[in-house]
Length: 123
Image 1 (cartoon, rainbow, N blue to C red):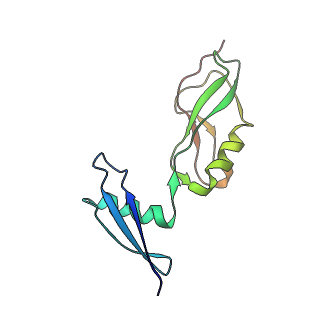
Image 2: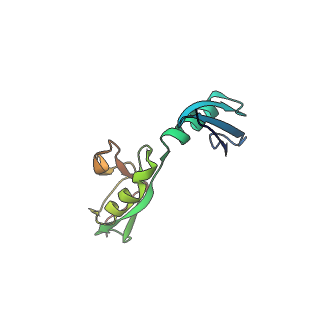
């Protein structure tokens, strides 16, 4: 049985607990050092299937500014973030746009919408 440990800092709250994750045969086994259950969940997710939010911009047609800031509505698989960002480079929306409007529905079939993170008025 191969045992591996990883040390990481939790990002779920300002405490920033230093946690040690134990992996046995490449699978999550345990975590120590966390002071709350959120830390344990974060550690397990981070070593088995890391996820990240995506923030980016898309082109705007007829808007007061040429770019609209956007964000993923939920987290995406970490290994697909760069691919999603590349996809967004080819997206153009038409003004006006309101904060929370869906800009891209179900990006790359991941079940995550990309939404506007600010209003964009028309020229």
